[in-house]
Image (cartoon, rainbow, N blue to C red; front, top):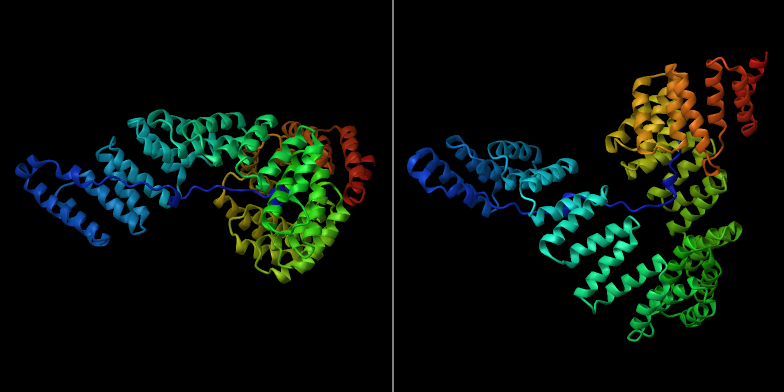
Length: 578
C-alpha cells in the first residue's frame, strides 16, 4: 500500500558533508618531479619537461591556472610523470572542472598506485562533485597504504559521520590514539555518541576533556546536561551548584537545577527555583523564553513535567501578553498535554499578534492533521499561504491537507510550488506523486518518482510508493518487485511496505509469497498506522486466487467493517456469496 511521509511533521536535522566542509591541501608535486638531478643529465626530454613544469608551478603561484595547465601539457609531451598529471588535476579542480581532474588523477595513480598525494587529489575531485562514496573509497585506500595519516583519518571520519557514525567513531578514536588527546576531535566523538544515544560514552569522553581543561565552564555544563539525560540528577546538581557559586543569577543554571529537582520528585525545591526565574520582572525575555522552550522539550520525554511547564507558560502570558511567542509556546504546551481546544485558542492568538509567525501556522496545521480535520487544515493553510506565499512548509502542508481532503486538483499548485522551492525534498515529491496518481496523471507521477530516486536512490518511501503504483497498473512489475525488495531491506518492519511487496507478488501470480507478506503486514499493523482495511482486502483477494473462498470472505468482511463506505468491496462480497 502507499504510505504518506509521516516525517513531514516531525522535523529533522540533516547533516550533509560537502566539499566546503572537507578541505585538504595536497602536497605539491613539484619536489617529487624535480628531485631527480641524474635524469636531467641522462634524458634531455626530462630536462625540457622539467622546464615546462617549473613554468607551470610559477603560473600556479600567480593564480593563472589555465596557463599552468598548458605548461603541464607541454611537459607531458616530453616526459610522462604522475607528478605532472597530479598538478594538472589540482588546477582543473580550481577551475571548476572536476570531471577532467578525476581522469588526470586516475592516470597519475595508474603510474604510482601507492602515492597517497595522488589519491588525495582524486578524493578532492570526487568531493567537488559530491561523490562522497568514491571520496571515502580513496581515503580508505590511503589508510591501507599508510594507516598513520591523522589528517586523512579525520577527513574520512567526517565523511562517515552522517550515515555511518560507528565507523566515524572508530576513526576518531584511531586519530586520538595516534596524536594523543585533542579537544576538537574528542568533541566530534561526543557529538556522535549523543546522536546515537550512547550517553555513557559521551560522559566518559567529556570527563577526559575536563581533565585536560578543568576550568572549562562549557564542558562542565555539558557534563551536567549528560547527567540529567542519563538520570544522574545528583551528579548534575553537584556541578550546577558549583557553577552557580559564580553565576547566582544565571536563569539557565536555575532551570537545569529545577529540572533535576523535578526528576527527583522534590517539587517544592523545583517550584521555588522556577518562581525566582519567572517573577513579575519582564526583563530578560529571551532567557525566559529559552527556558520555556527547554520545558517544552522536557514535556515530550517526561509527563511529570507537564504541570510545571504549564505554569511557566501561564507566567509568560502574564509577563508578555503582547508577545506572539508566549501564546505559541502555550499552544504547543497545551497540544503536548492533549488539550486540543486550548492549543487551538493559543495558536490562533499567536497568529493574530504576528501573522508572519510560520511556526504557529505550522503547529496549527499539525494539530488539525492529527485530529484528521483536513478541511479545517486546508482552510487555515490557505490563509497562511496568502501571507507567506514563498514558505516551503506552508505550501507543503496546504497541498497535503487538500490531498487528504480529497481535493487533489487544488492540491497540485501548492505542491508544485513546494517542489519548486525545495526540488530535492522527499516529502514534497512523494506527496505530489500521490496527488498525480489520484488524478490518473500517471506519466507525471512516474516523472516525479524517477526524479526523487535520482536524488535519493535508497529512499524507502519513494521506492515503496512507486512499486505499489506500478503494481496497481500492472506495469513493469519486475522492476516494482526490485524496488519493493529494497524498501523492505531498508525498513523490514514497515507494514505498508510489507503489504506492497505482497501485492507485487500477487500481481506476479505468486500467491503463497503474497499471502505470507500481507499476513506479516497485518500482524505488525498498529493503531498509529491507520485502518487495516486495504491490507485485509488484499489478503481476501489473495485467498480468492488461492481458491480459499471462506477465508477470502472472512477478510473482505473485516475490511468492510473497517471501511463501511467501500461500495466496490460490498459488491465483491455479494458476488462471492452468489
